[in-house]
Image: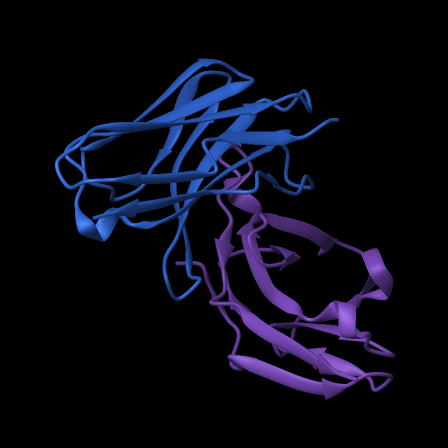
Length: 113
Length: 116
C-alpha cells in the first residue's frame, strides 16, 4: 500500500527518558513534516525537511531533534521527555509545489508519565 | 501572519440535512485553502483544495467548498449529511509565497456530529 507509516503507534514512557519516532513514506514525495496535535486537537507544525534539508524549524525545544536520512524517511528523537510532551505526533509528506496536499500518517500517541 | 479560524467547535445536523462547516482565513497574498477530515485514532485525510479558478470546489465523499475572497471565507458544505460524515474537520491555509516550504496553518477544528 502507498502510504505514510509511523512507528510506534503508541509510546508510553517515563519523564526523563529519550525516545524516537520513525516515519517512512513510499509516495515518492520530497518534503516531509512533523506536526504535534495536543489534547484539544490543535495541530502545530514542528519541522519540515525537503530532500533531506531542514526548511522549517518552528519554536520547538531543542530536546526535539529531527533527522532525515533520505527523502523517504523522517525521524523524530526526543530527549529528556517531559509531561507536556504528551500528545499525538503526526508525520506528513507532499510533493513540493503550491498545489499539493499533505498526506498524513496515522499518528504516534506519546504518553509521558 | 497566516491564520485560520473555525468559529464553531461543534456542528450538529440531522442525517439527510445539508451541512456547513465554517472557515475564515487571513493571509498575505493569494491563499491556497484546504479541508481535511480526521476520524478517531487516524491521521488527517485530504478532502479538497482551492488554488485558483472556480470559487466552488468539489472534493471527496460529496463535499464541496466555496471560496469567497471578499469575506475571506472557505466554508465546507454537503447537500445531504450522512452519519458516517461524523468526524473532526480542519480548514488549512498556505500562502502562495510559501511554496518552497509548504507550511500549512490549520484551524482549531470543528467536530461534525450527524444524528440519524
